[in-house]
Image (cartoon, rainbow, N blue to C red; front, side, top):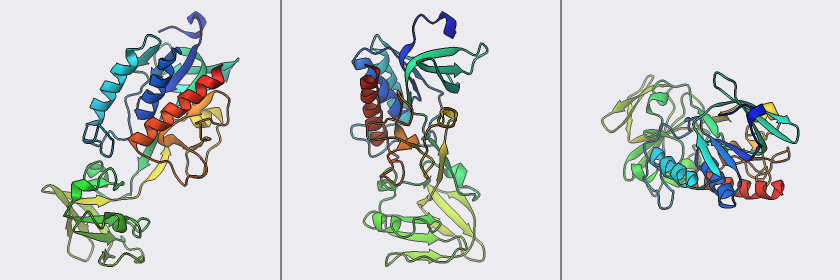
Length: 301
C-alpha cells in the first residue's frame, strides 16, 4: 500500500464495502476498465445467517461462499483490486476524495469517485436470547426465512408487524402466535393467536425455540420473527455530510447518486425517498450496486 503522496494517480473509484452491493459495483466498474479498489472490512449484516435464500441461482448458498466467488470474479479484471481493510474516515479533497485506512501508517488513498456500500446494522429487541438465536431461528424477513418454517408453528415478537406478517406467512406455516410483550393486543388476521404476557426470554429447544412468558405457559415454535431498528454500519455518511432519510438510510436518487458529486451509495444503507425503507435483500443490493457504479462511470466522464 502507498500513502497519498506516493500514489501515482487517484483511483477512478473506491468501493467501501464487500457485500453484494459493493462487489457488484466493483464488477460493473471493472467491466469498463475503470481503476477500482474494493475495501472490505470483513463485517457483514448477514454474518449470523448460515444460508442465503430468495437469491436466484444462489438459493441456499452460504453468504461466505457467495462473497468468495464474487471476489474471485472481480479480481480477474486487470483494473480491479480487492483489499481486506477497514476504513476509518472519508473526506472531500481537491477534486476528489481521501480515504483513510485503519493501519499503523494511517494510509491515505485518493479517488475521483466513491461507492458507499457499507450496509446497515440491525438493532435487535432487548429480549434475552434474541441475539444468541439471531440469523436462523430469530429472523425478520419472511422472504429470506419463511419456507424453512413450512408447516410449523412460528411466533411474531412485538406488535409492529403483527398485522401484515402473519398474513404473509399464512399459506406457509401451520400457525402464528403474536407475542405482544405486555403491549396492547393489536388487530391480527383470523386464526392468529395472541399472547399478551411479558416475554421473559427465548431459548433453543431442539431444532426450534421456546419462548418463556411471565405468568403463563411457554410457547414452542420453529422460529420467531422480530422487527429490528436500523442504523448505519459505518460513519462515512455523517463524515461527508450526506443527506439522510428518516429511515436512517442515505438518500439517493434512482441512479444511486447522493447529495455530493461522484459519491454514490448502494445496498441497504441507502434508498430513494419514494420507498419507506431500504429493500434489504441480496438481489436488491446487487442491483443497486450495478446501478450506482454505472451512474458513477457517467459522472467520471
